[in-house]
Image (cartoon, rainbow, N blue to C red; front, side, top):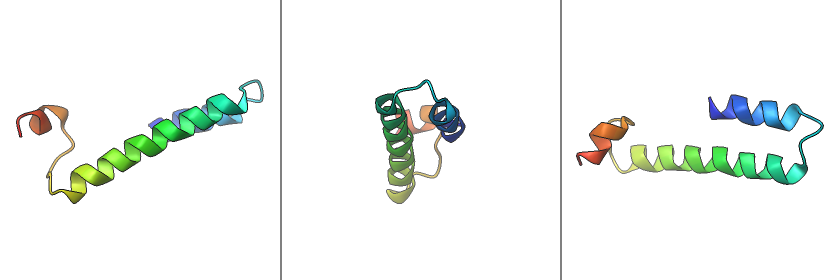
Length: 53
């Protein structure tokens, strides 16, 4: 979902490059967090289940 939003922002010629860069950083941060959660052995990405751990 966030990749689709990033692509929509990046495809708009009116959007400054700084905004595209920030959107890309947000997508990267989300992907990195997901990889970390899975790497440390959390079996789910459900926020409520993770909050209970």
